[in-house]
Length: 126
Image (cartoon, rainbow, N blue to C red):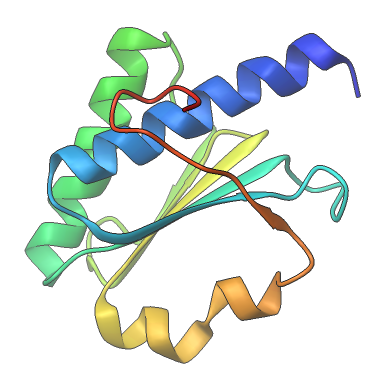
């Protein structure tokens, strides 16, 4: 994969994580899957406190990435129910979970080979 694509994907993932933190999402994790999976480069995983919080966090991420990065999700799942919202930006996939589903699916454990990427609140690397 080209370095510029990875750098651009990382910036988008960092920004998505920062946007989740803006709305007080908890347990926000950024995983680098570039060496582990051909499906995507990064996962952003976050938890909302309720169905409404999950939906509003996902909507905030979509609006923020559109405004700042000029990108819209290629595919969206689960926004209506608010239990697990998946925002597919191709090279970055954002998962916003209700706490019970995050605990049940344990994506971090499933993708334990992926490296955790440090984040800062502004959406850039520390």
